Length: 392
Image (cartoon, rainbow, N blue to C red; front, side, top):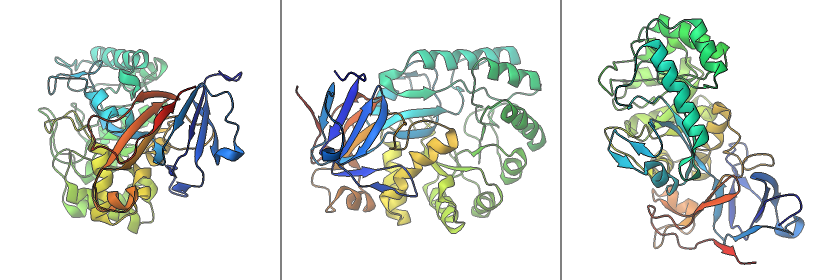
């Protein structure tokens, strides 16, 4: 073991995706991490690779930041009563997702709607996912749903207890733009980030949230701008992109055509850094372990955007908007990676070309905080080449 601590060396990398729109492709064939954080990126011959506790031979495949799902609805552990499904988070890890953001624990049976109860649930959710990471996946949870009667001191109490997120505005009893705006301001004052439901109702108790409510509430994230599940009319989607400078979230469980419209509008505005990706799972559509990869392939192929750019939507863009220390391959960031390659027999000469044609890549390995969490994915199509651990 290195004197400096637990040292990971990934060598023989064919391509490095940075997660940064400014420079989506990096020059180099090696990445070094110590104690779960990236310390060096470049060519192996120029880096200090001695004393590695773990050495991975990438075998020529692509290294990318671990994918971030910006919109999920967890409940407890790795179980969801929404679909009566166990190990759904582990399945998403096998789709390349290493971090998730809760948009509210709304599927908890008997979810409390009184203010004391909803605060207790949020604090408990934050705690149990802080203490237990299913398969190593970083679940940022504890996202209370706004209910009528909440006051400023409630948000301070939540923040003081460690809560940093609000559940989707509109899933609770607060649906009026003016009321939501005041509560979003209180949340922001105490460092709590907000997401607003956009579109038609998704679960009993939710309702239509149109552009006027979204604009007035001014939440930090325009949640599932392409609908969860039902999208707003096209003119309302473009209006939101143009008149609200917050994050533009596109999800798998929404309207794909509307998602493409939102992405194209962001590019027309010269603001692709606002686009982030989520699944909105578990939901009536189920759990989509490959949902983020499918979104990348869909937006790249049908939107005619370079895949290395679209990967940034699910990594660096989300990390910056969500204030996470992962999602970008640069020194000091968390060593959260996926090693991926072109699927066996897939068209396209390279992995990026294959994705641009609408095909999924194969995940060969996931790494979180410098620790290997999974090898060959059980869910993606098999990769052409696979990374492997070099025996000492």
